[in-house]
Amino acid sequence: MSFARRFFKNTAWLSLGQLSNVFTSFLWVAIIARYIGPELYGIYGYSFSVASLLLLMVNFGFDQYIVLNISKNKNLTLILWKKILKYKLYAIPIYLICLTLLSFSKNWSISYILIFYLVAVPLVIEALTSTIISVFHSHQLMQYDVWTQLIKSFFVLIFAVIGVQLKFDFSIILLLNFLAFIIRLSVIFILFKKIILNNFSIQTNGQNFNDLRYIKIIKDSFPLFLLSIVSIIYSNLVILIVEWLNSPLYDLGVFVAATRLQGYVLLLPSVLHTVITPSFSSLYSQNIYDFKNKFIIALKILYFFSYILAIIVSLNSELIVHIVYGSKFEDAVPLFAIQALMLIGGPGYLFGSTMLIINKQYVSLLFYLVALLVVICFSVIFVPQFGVIAASWAMVSGVVAGQIVYPFFIFKTLKIKFPVLFFAKVIFTSLFIFLIGSGAKYFQLNLYIQNILIFTSFIILFFSFGYLKEREFNSFIDFIFSKFTDKLNSIFVK
Image 1 (tube, rainbow, N blue to C red):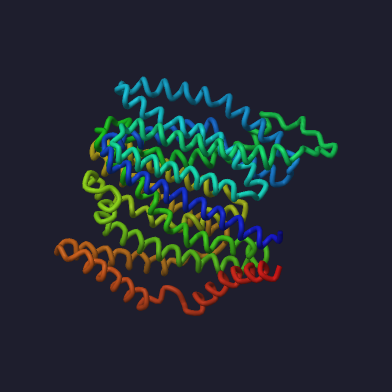
Image 2: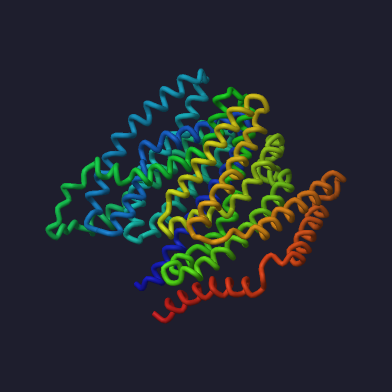
């Protein structure tokens, strides 16, 4: 199979898998949150955040390590898989002990502790599954990941609907959810045994794998672990701080609801980033000057749409929260309205992929560390006094701080000038549209009238300011689609 055909096949499978995962998670959250209410949902959100952080000691960046190394040398397949699996099996009891100690330190009721375990334990199954999935990925067999993900998604949704319709206790629904994870692990292992274990024999060709010791694997995986731990801490830290500061479970629940919804909304800028990024990888090695020019244009597009999208989502926060969560989560509306402003961090996707292309991943790590430090300081100072509203502003402050630090290093590394005038236009447009929307809300105009005013002002300002020169925009669009059509042509020619 040609590179182009394989590239598009794998991209299509991975996109389908991610879409399925996000869609299932979104529906499950909407169904369950409406059913259990804010307090139990707060316990669920806190349990998931804690379990995700503790699970780092089990995963430790090994899954990425498997993909990177087996892709280069298929002879490592079974040796590396067995070593990683053995490490995870040793680490899981430590993970469970930590969960036990933490759960009993909370003075929770037995039902809350049971929920805590039923949220955390399926993640162990997912960690074991991901080891097998990584082997499939390294062999360019992404379809097996997606098919088993679709099977799990089907059972997760079916069990959730059955549990809600039959009015099961939340712990029973979580137990059924755990069963869906077991089903996926069973299916993927059967496929792994049939396709990899039975049909892939280790041909060492005289190579010596004795130096592939745990200490070497851990050392090589550490950079991947470091980046993943910072990003996971950043996405879960504020929830832990809110609980640690003894916020009421109701407040914790509405905050978790707003945060989860914000996570889904933040996927919107990544769609544009996904279209743009693949074309940049080949361009960097071919023409650095053209790469810099296209980077500036892509940055302008992402900045503009991220800022405007942040304002539009924030102004429609009440409608979005009511559609997803219903009336039980009314108090999540102002929290989501604030957290939606995190969409201004949309260009961060482009920054991260650019740093990966030019092999400067430490800049991404620096961004996360700066944002993390700001979030911690803001939360510890203001959350005790102002509650979950301050926690939402803390999350936004981290993104804003990152957007100040990240571009500085990006443009310094690439040795290009930051488009200050364009950035000023974007801020002015965003503020103007926000004032239009706020004024429409103040005068209690119909929701449809509000959005008509917002979009009308957006279109007027877009054309009056001339955000992108027509020549720039046309050349950029031609560049993106020419890469796409070239790959399609190569597929059909083959």
